[in-house]
Image (cartoon, rainbow, N blue to C red):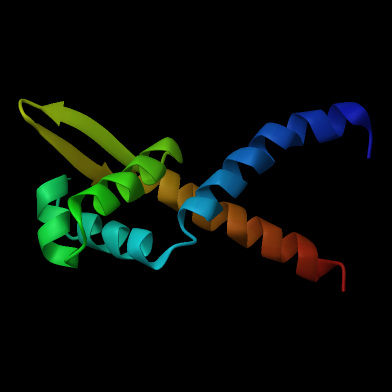
Length: 106
């Protein structure tokens, strides 16, 4: 692989890996499911649903936001969170491409 090709793919690979890593925890999967069921939620609503400590949920939400899978919006004194459906669809497409690329060479 040439240097220019590997450099052009590196940011995409890093972004994909960051999103996969964000999905690699059961609590974050449950948070995404809960957020997907409603338009948006506060951290408190997620805490109440999952029965996890507020600090734990906050940390998981931070990871999901940093990975670009969840959008954050300040709403007066509450923070509102919502799934970024386009980003999640992008993860699905990236996984599909990876599987197809790896399996097609067999």
